[in-house]
Amino acid sequence: MVGAFTYANNLLYGNTSGAYSLIGGDYHIRTGSPAIDKGTANGALNYNLDFILRPQGAAVDICAYEGGR
Image (cartoon, rainbow, N blue to C red):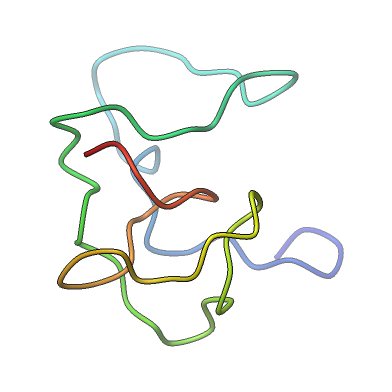
Protein backbone atom coordinates (compact mmCIF):
# COMPACT_ATOMS: atom_id res chain seq x y z
CA MET A 1 0.00 0.00 0.00
CA VAL A 2 1.32 3.42 -0.99
CA GLY A 3 -0.46 6.34 0.64
CA ALA A 4 -4.21 5.89 0.23
CA PHE A 5 -3.88 3.65 -2.83
CA THR A 6 -3.46 -0.08 -3.13
CA TYR A 7 -1.71 -1.35 -6.25
CA ALA A 8 -2.92 -4.89 -6.90
CA ASN A 9 -3.65 -7.09 -9.90
CA ASN A 10 -1.53 -5.04 -12.26
CA LEU A 11 0.60 -5.77 -15.32
CA LEU A 12 3.89 -4.53 -13.89
CA TYR A 13 4.35 -6.72 -10.83
CA GLY A 14 6.66 -9.61 -11.63
CA ASN A 15 7.19 -8.42 -15.21
CA THR A 16 10.56 -9.71 -16.40
CA SER A 17 10.72 -7.75 -19.68
CA GLY A 18 12.43 -4.71 -18.16
CA ALA A 19 12.13 -1.69 -15.91
CA TYR A 20 9.13 0.62 -16.11
CA SER A 21 8.52 4.16 -14.97
CA LEU A 22 5.00 5.34 -14.21
CA ILE A 23 6.00 8.97 -13.81
CA GLY A 24 4.54 11.33 -16.40
CA GLY A 25 3.48 8.61 -18.81
CA ASP A 26 0.41 8.01 -20.91
CA TYR A 27 -1.57 5.24 -19.28
CA HIS A 28 -4.10 4.66 -22.05
CA ILE A 29 -4.33 1.01 -22.96
CA ARG A 30 -3.22 -0.02 -26.44
CA THR A 31 -5.11 -2.14 -28.92
CA GLY A 32 -4.22 -5.79 -28.44
CA SER A 33 -3.08 -5.37 -24.84
CA PRO A 34 -3.45 -8.45 -22.63
CA ALA A 35 -5.07 -6.12 -20.06
CA ILE A 36 -8.24 -5.61 -22.12
CA ASP A 37 -11.29 -7.12 -20.38
CA LYS A 38 -9.06 -8.86 -17.81
CA GLY A 39 -9.85 -6.69 -14.78
CA THR A 40 -12.35 -7.09 -12.01
CA ALA A 41 -15.06 -4.69 -10.94
CA ASN A 42 -14.00 -5.23 -7.32
CA GLY A 43 -12.83 -1.77 -6.21
CA ALA A 44 -12.98 -0.37 -9.76
CA LEU A 45 -14.55 3.00 -10.38
CA ASN A 46 -17.69 3.23 -12.53
CA TYR A 47 -15.94 5.70 -14.84
CA ASN A 48 -12.34 5.83 -16.03
CA LEU A 49 -10.12 8.91 -15.93
CA ASP A 50 -11.65 10.15 -19.21
CA PHE A 51 -15.13 9.87 -17.61
CA ILE A 52 -16.05 6.91 -19.83
CA LEU A 53 -18.40 4.37 -18.28
CA ARG A 54 -16.77 1.06 -17.35
CA PRO A 55 -16.78 -1.66 -18.54
CA GLN A 56 -16.81 -1.12 -22.30
CA GLY A 57 -16.39 -4.82 -23.09
CA ALA A 58 -16.87 -8.12 -21.27
CA ALA A 59 -15.06 -6.84 -18.17
CA VAL A 60 -13.11 -3.79 -17.00
CA ASP A 61 -9.64 -3.28 -18.40
CA ILE A 62 -6.61 -3.47 -16.11
CA CYS A 63 -5.83 0.19 -16.64
CA ALA A 64 -6.76 3.67 -15.44
CA TYR A 65 -8.53 4.11 -18.77
CA GLU A 66 -11.06 1.93 -20.53
CA GLY A 67 -10.44 1.41 -24.21
CA GLY A 68 -7.81 0.24 -26.64
CA ARG A 69 -10.25 -1.44 -28.94
